[in-house]
Length: 465
Image (spheres, helix red, strand yellow):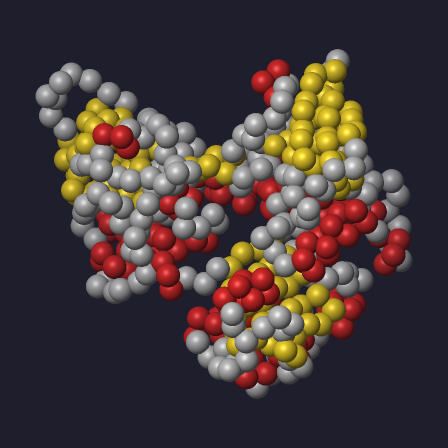
């Protein structure tokens, strides 16, 4: 761009149309501010295009196939089950596309909000270049999200591979899908494609799956996947890959032995990294940490005055709901005179396997590390009427309570409708009320939630606290 060229001035610039950016742009515009929103590719960000919405749509398709195969358990005859992957992808594309189009339409029809297509780069703390134009504002909000991290694997440069993003483009059934990784993305795709009909092998470098969880959860998830016919290999110390005809050979070395897996496709699901490396942040006073995440304070302000960072790029949450909560915090503080902070947020999320895993608050390991005296209550899903009636009794409910205050420290539910039932606990934790708030409540029968009060009524000392 020509040196000294004048910039178009706005009250606020929002970079990125993920989960936090669009509602923030609309809120600021509705407050009378002149707002520019910049998006270089797909409106809606990861959630709408390659994350929550499309993957959960695919998971729903996979569950239908799974339940159709189980139909005889319920006295229903269906015949052979076939999955048309082209139709599966078409349904996913329709659901995802509708959400993406809705976000774009909302932004383009909002008064005071102008949409700019292209890649944004900082010129300085208050100036952005995009598509040959310079935009300026006293307030700039970064919502650029993240992408799949590619691990160092011998031979990877000569082998085609997939990520969670490129998986959204396939309309065929991989004969044998090898997945490197053992956390949430890996296990969701593993179960999904096994149910579609692929052979699936998981290669996990650690000693157990979903290592962020307690060991009982990791074991339950391992058993779930193995029971569905997924080959799960743990403690993989080294991985190498090479092309072999139309397929891929994966060499996996564990402490015990080296083995070769002949796969048709390779999916890398080993974590995420922020999209902050090509924003021109070196031209600003915005600080990043060693992993590239933008450093923010408790109200999401960066080290540069007038610049905020929201969503996955700030490292303060890796979920759609935490990104949206970032938007709520910023809007509440800037427009409503409130004082909301990131540190008020309670960690909560779900893994959308079938059955789902849902967690809120602390794990057993975190409680022990913090030196808290705690109580624990558990119930198997076989005791839940809703689960028993539906023939889906895998899993358990677990709650953790402070032994001194009776405040809830955390909960982990693995089982049918766990992702919905967990909010019963979440809301009481936000209210900072004791667990008796739940035990004194009357829940509807027969539901999953009805057993939650009984779990809190049978608490025992947590070992090691």
